Figure: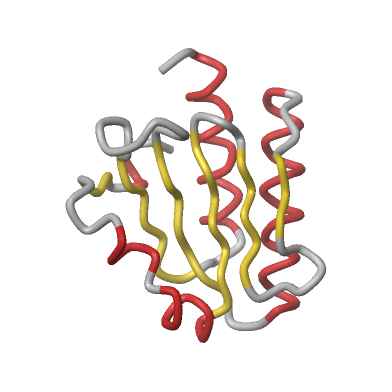
Length: 118
């Protein structure tokens, strides 16, 4: 990965850890799809926390690299998708994460310990 992607991903993960999200998961999709290299998946306890976490990730990545994501779902706050190109951050509320079970769609993609990327 280019250095800016590493910096963006590290900034996003650090913001997620600091925001105390639950179930943080990083999946390597580089060999499974063409639209991104990684999914970062987590959940918060409420719609308000989901939006707050998205704000924290946006601020952290912008401060580190100047990148802004393509953003979907922020207004509703049940599932916010933040597309940075080489990685996509999915921030769910607990109910939406259980309903969509996104990680089960990519069950064969290798997981990466987020601590190794921070």
